[in-house]
Image (tube, rainbow, N blue to C red):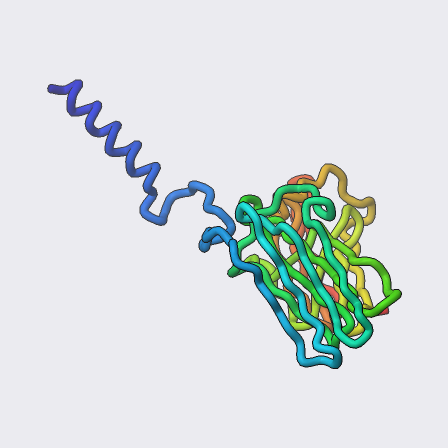
Length: 222
């Protein structure tokens, strides 16, 4: 009977640790809505020539992105896995498209598996620069990242970059005096704990080699 009782208690504890009742330490997926995206997402603008973006999906992942603007006949496409080779599973709750004055579309999304942020900057005008991608975005889908409307942010091993979506001007915040090596871009919080970015100031708490570094500085866009 004692052996049976001990076995029963161990089983109860194991069940509690797995189900955790919302209080455990088991890691949670970044996206609470993991519904497979199948239908295209289309975002249209009332800017001149009616620019729009269409994002198509296959096997729950982004398959292709089409954007165009009438009048000038500007039509562009991206095959997603040729543009970003890492597998990315987005969620509708963490995927947005902003069309800025018919000049650019900014697509912002996070990968549900890792929480890694991505940004795409898609130009509408003929002869403009090619589509740009940022695979280390600091998106405000993450509850520890706050960005004022109209701003996007991304980082490398030297700077946090803050870009004004409307003007294309960029401000920079140095991470450390010597740069950071060995960044795990699929685990952003191993480096950047939290940020609060406005058009005039950046607050950023970093963890570098186990030490906390805090920046709280004015921003200058150029």
